[in-house]
Amino acid sequence: MKHSILLKVIPAAALVGAVASHSAPAEAQSRCTSGTRVVSDLAANYSEQLAKWGCKGAKDPAACLEKAKKVEEVIRASIKKWNELAGNSWATIGPRELVFQGKMDGKVVLGSERLFVTKAPVFEGDSVRVEVLKEGGKADTRVTLAMFDESGKCLEGDEVVFGGKDKKGTKRNLKLSGISGKYLAVKVNAKGGKAFDYELRATLSGN
Image 1 (tube, helix red, strand yellow):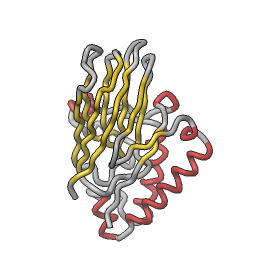
Image 2 (cartoon, one colour):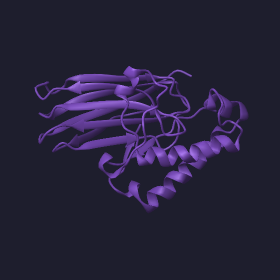
Image 3 (spheres, helix red, strand yellow):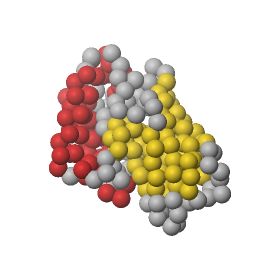
């Protein structure tokens, strides 16, 4: 059975990062959001699980886990790791959850960021679309969507930009494919001393 993993997040200011993959195309690298401590911690646990079930180094780790019928166990191990980390450190500071049904409202101010990240790899779907709706504010804002492998490296990214003069109700869409077995991260980055109010809707498809 295939699964999607709902996710919680922490403010980007509370995190430190990993580096974009050199194997990704130049354009993809430029759109990759910086890696984070949460991605690094969770990816390391995922890498251990892949090794445990003989899928480390596989061309398609997600397909390998499906064939071995170990997706459920990897999901449980990932959630257990998330809970351990959340109880001890970074995830106790401003957690958020990205859901694949319904909407999420948020606001970034004074040049701050908000980061959303999956707490386990995504298995239900091979493509994702994130709709970003501007609800208010006058900050120039960059929103990125990226996927990370089991080493915590960014493989590919997409981005949209909102201008301070863009009207309330302006929509932009972020899209990625080939996400099965990968972590996803969405970062909302407002510039300057102004605010950006937004609504996110994330949808999985394929597989």
